[in-house]
Image (tube, rainbow, N blue to C red; front, side):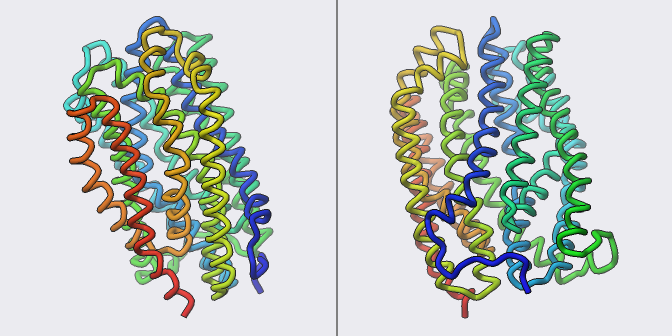
Length: 443
C-alpha cells in the first residue's frame, strides 16, 4: 500500500496547500540573488556588480544544466511511491548521488577552462576580469554540495513532503544571505565575500540535511540506504541516464537562453550587463513563485501515473495552470507599484537606476505569459516525458537565438527583452503541441 493517498479530483485548494511551503522556499532563492546583487550594487564601483553578474550567470548556466538531478529524481521517486516500490525509490536517490559527485569533480577540474571561456566571451576591463576570477575560484568548490541539494529537494518533492524540501531551501538561503552580508559588509571581502557565503551555506546545509534524510528514510520507508550491487543495475542506470540526459539537454538550452541575455547585454556595453542583471532578478522572483505550482504538480502528476488515474491527472493539470496564470497576473500588478523602489534598494548608482526604469515594462508583462511554459514543464517532468521537453526547448532556442540577434540589432536593449518574451511563448506553444502524448501513460 502506498504511504500517500490523493483524492481522485485534485482541487485548486489542495494544490495551493501543497504549494504554500514551496512559495516560501522559492521566495528565499531569489532573495539570495537580490541580496548579492544589492551588496555589489551598493559598493563604490559598478565593476563589482558587473563581475558578479557575469560570473553568476555563467556558473548558474553550468550548475543548473544538471538540474536533472532534481527534476529526474522527482518523476522517478513519485512514480515509485505510487507503485509502493520503496526500495527502488531509495536506489534512485543513491544512483543520482553517485552521478552528482562525479559531475561536481569534473566541474572543479574544468575551473581554468571556465575562467578562460568567460574572458573570451565577454569584453570587459582588466579589473573586471580579476574580480571574475576571484569569485569563480571560490564559488566553484560549492559544486558538490549544490548538486547534492538538487537531489535532496527532488526526493522530498517526489514524496510530497514539500515542507521539508522548502525548509532545506529556506535554511540554505538564509545562511547564504547572512554569511554573504557578514563577509562583504563586515570583513570587506567584496566579490570573494558573496562567493564564500554561497560556499559555506551550501556545505552546512547539505551535511545537516543528508544526515537527517538518512534517518528519515529508515523511519518512513523501513529501508536502510546502502550501496550495493543493484544500485548499479545496468538497465536501471540506462533508464536513469536516458531521462537525465534529456533533462540535461533541456536545462543546458534553458540556462543558455538566459545566459544569452547577459551576453547580448555585454555587446551593448558593461552598463547594460549591470541593469539587465538587476531586471533579471525580477524575472527570477516571478519564475520561482510560479515554479511553486510546477514543483508541487510534478509529484502529483507522477503519483497519478503510478496509480493509473487519468481523472486525477486531468484535474491537477487544469487547476494548476489556472492558478499559475492568476499568480502571474498578481506578480505583474505588484511589479507595477513596487519595481522602482526595489531597483533603488538594489543599486545606489543613479545612472543604473535611470537606465533600469526604462525597461520596467518588460518585467511587468512577462510573468503571466511565462506562467504557461513553467507549468507545462512541471507536468511533463512529473510524467517523465523528457524527450518532449528536450525537443520543445531545442525548437524554442533555435528560433530564439537568431530572433534575439536581429531584434537587438534593431531595437537594442528593448530587442533583448522582446526576444526573451518570444522565447517564453515558444516554450509554451511547443509543449502544448506534445501534450497529448502524456495520455499514453495511462493505457
